[in-house]
Length: 194
Image (cartoon, rainbow, N blue to C red; front, side, top):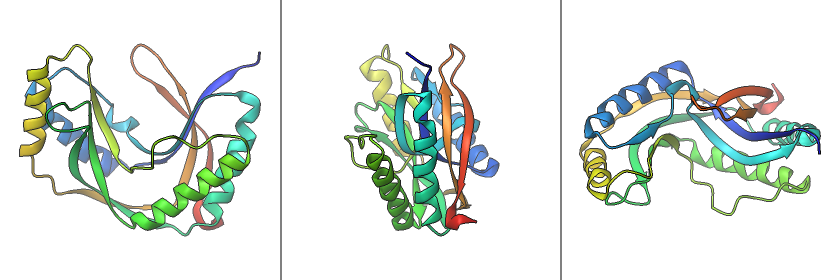
């Protein structure tokens, strides 16, 4: 049994957007709800989460990412809007939404999924819902604490946290550690074959 690598394909965010997300997290922390916040420099837009895969399958993932990226032109996205899954009464995940050229993003993600499926990686069960995860409510949070977070989210009027041009997608290795995941970029595929 060879090495297995926790792998995903994502769009990384520019520092200005990461700073905007950090400011939102600071405002949300006032609710005092037990939340495991994602470090702002580690927040990314996941296109496909593959989980633990044999190291020998990485070239196939890189090839799929390269083909999907080469067929897509660069496009613009904007981080804006705040929400929770599944709802404000029982929030489990806090996220920032996206605007901009979402159709181009969906086409890129669908093409990536096709190319991965052609190489034996099953598509994810859930439909693609583009968002940036800020944090996850900890299991020990009491219902009233979760509701307080939902009320804080509902009360925050969030404008734009920044626009950026998506020019590449990355295949990323995730090593889980007690202090938080360590991400290593294994491959960058440029949009439009640039």
